[in-house]
Image (tube, rainbow, N blue to C red; front, side, top):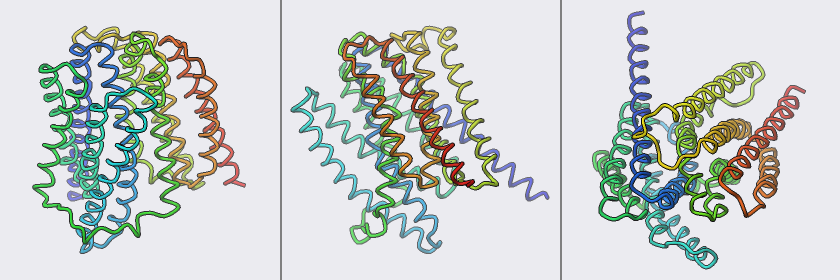
Length: 406
């Protein structure tokens, strides 16, 4: 009894420190946005925030690969586990190089159709590939169930981002300079972890035979579409809100709600293994969904109302209260959509998810066909997009459950 009690207390302490450090890291990120919103021009801050959202989308293939690799590493024997970790790391190095060149080709051709700052996109490509190694070290620590070390790296990574992004921008007020601060933080964390853990690239370990099959391709495609769909409003705002005041107002007002989305994704992905449909466990799954949605609603309500009470020093500049309200509701429905899509993924309902995405794409075309948006009407269209999409995915899930029961 004493041993069981001691073990539970030890685990509870680890979980407490994990949530504490991750929460502080989240505050570092927010404080970084606050400082940069006061230093950068509204337009430049909008571009910076869009670049961070684009980074979260571009790094998705790595997250999917890690998601897949984790099962292979966990299922391997203790004697083979280190070899598997080394093998996947070597594969990741090779894939990151290929991905970097693919991004350069994409941005090169994209330059012909849309005027872009190539320096900005070059640095964003480098940051994307470096983020592969950040995600991999988190994967290894999660596999080892080392919650304290995992959250500590997250803590110091976000702290270093706050320091370098805030300091380096004082020397030159350009978005790509801010991203250089982000890159310096990545390099320091990557060097510290991989140097101390003696992980090196070994070309003899490179082996893709077990990694890529039709099921993995389907899973990857849907996962990428899910992340892309979660941030589609930020991407569209970059192209459709041609007025710089509208663009900067929308970007600034969505920072905090979208930060909740970024914050929630790791925890939502963590419950993925428990989402496989079993009739006897369905009530438990439904209870988890409802609990998450209630918690999400409360958090976003606090986010919205706290904006009226926070001292001005903690506010991001150029926030519009109405857009913030719409963005909070849109984020609520966006995360609810992610939950439903992951539930379908867990049960391999690929065709049904594709139907949901096709209908959602038609909604995007319908709601955003107007190229003369102001920021408020754009934000309201975003709420309608995510809200109706939630109804679509919910209906698909209800139909599937009835089919399972039948």
